[in-house]
Length: 344
Image (tube, rainbow, N blue to C red):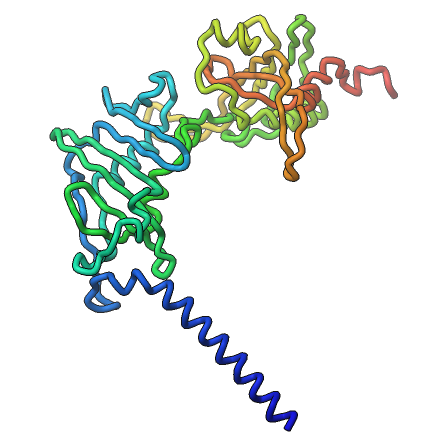
């Protein structure tokens, strides 16, 4: 009897699990069943809008990342909020191409469409607008994600049909302003600089105290600290000379770090043949004033951190790093090579 009861219990548990799975599957299929498709194996994609033969002259996107708009003028994308913002031209061109031509993997049957709210289209997760060189324009609304097919509902102005597209379409349009900024290259990483490539590292503080490190041991140790200043903490994407000096304490007379190194390069001889050689390069970081910023740790605890501004020479961008990292570099103002220290 006990064995029979156990079998009954197991059977009930299995049946409940199966029922739960069926209910979950039914929920996932709720909207997909409204999609008008012929056969699973057939290509049911359809081009919803195709303006690929035209130039996108203006685009705007609203999402959880904010409201952003850009204008294409003089063969370049310009941020409408600030003409000095260094727009990443490749990223904006990709966004423009996305809006110029969009294909849907399927569409919802218009006779069984229901309310826009069922698809998250009453309050779109992503809303975009585009203007084209022929004077026409279009708007796009992206709503809920259909997890069953990993696609997203969307509509285009002038068309009452609700389509489904790959989720990558909408995600390619979103991003913060900072993510659309053209970042500067950090040469010491981009050129793959090692200690063996460095000729010297010159450091000078705001008071004019300086030191030039030329020995192999000093260069190897100091280069590791300098490479921490790799332009990742951006404080300002554009500062003119006055703002650079007044707000960030950066000018030609402030502290600096200069790395002189050799990088491989390709030359062409008089016969048109390419050959590899090395080129001496100089990279200088201008050091600004210290400041304190508020921080929040992973547990939500608040604190403060001492930081220092810095900027590459001839750059309008300003970066910052923690003061400890900057101090590690300037500790080498007191550095003396072992062979010159009087030690045996």
